[in-house]
Amino acid sequence: MRSQNIQKDLSLIGDNLINKFIQKDKILDGIIDHFYEEKNILKKTIDKKEVFPDENRKVLVDQLKKQYSEVKLHKETSKNINSLIDSNTFTITTGHQLNLFTGPLMVIYKIAQVISMARYLNSKIKNFNYVPIFWLASEDHDFDEISYVNISNKQIKWGIDSHNNRVGKIILNDFNRITDDYKSKIIDAEFKIQLEELINQSYINEDSLSFSTLKFINSLFGRHGLIIIDPDKKAFKELFIENFKNEIIDSRCKIDTEKQIEKNKKDIESYKPQVNPSEINFFKITPKGRMRIRIKNNVISVDDEKQYSTEELINQIESNPERFSPNVLMRPLFQEKILPNICYVGGPNELKYWMQLKLFFDNSNLQYPILKLRSSAFIIDQKTSLKIKKTDVELEYFFKSINDLVNHKLKKLSTVNVSFDSIKEILSDQFNKLRDVSNKTNKSFEGALNAQEKKQMKGIDDLEKKLIKAEKKNHQEQINNIKIIFESLHPNNVDQERHLNFANFYSLKGQGLIDHLVDKVLIPDDKILVINLED
Image 1 (cartoon, rainbow, N blue to C red):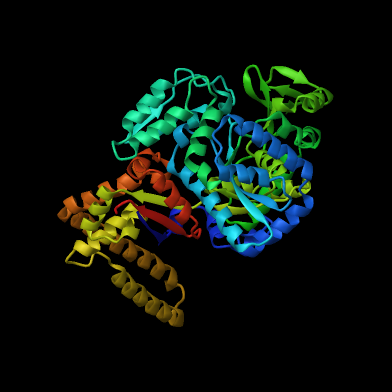
Image 2 (image 1 turned 135 degrees about the horizontal axis):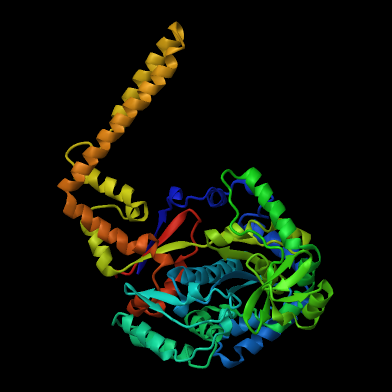
């Protein structure tokens, strides 16, 4: 395996907020706390040490030990769990939904990245210790989003009725047919049997999806010291009682988040919030599943069925906090309440909702973590690598838009210049000269000149498009070849990392793939990691 970093095309991101985050634009002051830099990590660590309670550390360690009591615990993970009782130990965290068999590749990349970051920070910052955390989104109830996995151009779907329950609590009944279908799609390579054994040990009928996911991810990353946390525990919810109560009493999340959104709109052109806050931003766990809490005409109701007074609901929160569950906007606060966390690693959409929460954190007396954009990566197998070499197209163009790729190839193939940029430049210069003449004689001609220039430029654009279309026909076979390669890296018009599962790549390289990712995935935000499996 070998790797290289390629410049990311920021125009493909299509989001002004995330582009400014990548560029570390100072306009984000007040939207985030600090950008990810070694000096800022150190400052945040010193500040966090002063405010994170020792009793929260004890709860965290106790719960983690209980959680791992029935799991094969690697010595590095055990060491990291024990270290969390020390006031000098802090976490680098990422999280994701409980996708089947880890879901798309980006989940693997996120996990590898927090391990790599913790390792790097431990080598650079003295007197403090950093451990990697993967937060299981076990309280999510959107089962449809996690009920499938894509492998070998085939989607495997777990077709059950979740009854709106938290996905982590779903029990694996008759799950062998899903694992058998999944294993049948793994290519028959050197490490297929090894992967199948990990699956058999992790996904066992009558286990919960949360526990199975924990075991599977632990089997892949435990040797690197990764700590996986299922936060759906009463002891953790007890630490969050006051936050739940404040949401009922004064709608803290809604008020603060709406103020932050207004600030963001003023500062960032074309800004749109990722999530709009509700009146109450946590759920109640009922026999019918995870249900929304609503306020209507000063009456609190759960799914418009059972009604509560404010006092009744607060009494329930105090006596049974495990029956309540934060939504997407309160979850970050819950996470930072129970973890001595310094940095959160997330994808663009995750960071966008975190960037609605700075004021909410401040007014809740919780430290806002440093945010880090997850690394983007592509894995190229030997077959695809050979095809790319034959195209005589530089690798970087396969990670731009399809139009950029095709036009670049056409320029290489064509015996004529398919770009009219030089003609447009000459034409623009001529109209500028006419504009100077107009200003010296009669300025009223300028409107007519502008209209004529626009008409002429459109004519040139139309001719250029026709020429490109004709050239595409002349080289149809070679254009089709590069399109096929592009589509293999961007299946269903999305990047490979958002669609494909890791299994076939693991089957080819085994644990070496995971180790390689941990070693290489820590890259700048404006780069893409490309891993070539060709030896």
